[in-house]
Image 1 (spheres, helix red, strand yellow):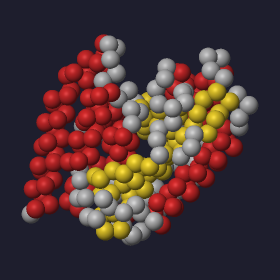
Image 2 (cartoon, rainbow, N blue to C red):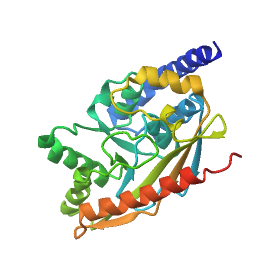
Image 3 (spheres, one colour):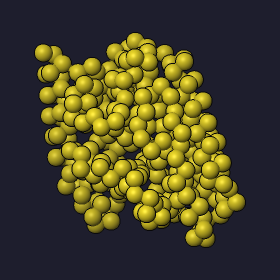
Length: 266
């Protein structure tokens, strides 16, 4: 009963918050007068609290620009977490545009949607990402191409790393940066989360959004760690496959370290 009441209350608060911010954020994006980043950060931070997320950040967003973040992917929760701690835009699967609430905010956050199963569009999608990087937007790439179980890192897909090469080939920049980021779900209701319980946070396969959202709200109090690694330089001479493997290795190291020794609660 308590879990149901908490779920209803949290969803009602998120809906009211969204309604309050909808018009000013829409005006910012459609008129181009502003990016609406402060509104988005407030929405994500407030939503994170309502969902019961406790976010711990280690390291910092790299200062170098253009900047592409390459992160592991566990759940739709990742989007709320990363947008709550940094001004970023997302490279998201096309289905996300149709999600309730989160889909609308992803559009207002100027996400780039990709159809991963349609290889014929990969060039155009990479070109759009390259243009956004050149404009100074920090783009987040969930480089596994799908969600994992939160315990292991899946091999990184190298296709969209091609956006880095494409941006440099335009001639406006001689160098850019790719920063590895690891997202680790470490505690549930204050207790260390084992492999079997990490599935509460993980959103794997074809599971519907709303039932998983209800599960997260019912359980409550999830601790998630965001680890920013050292950014890797990328130039016209760099191999996207080699850089992808290097970044993948750093994300894997940070994730395993975080899961083996979760940060103590404060």
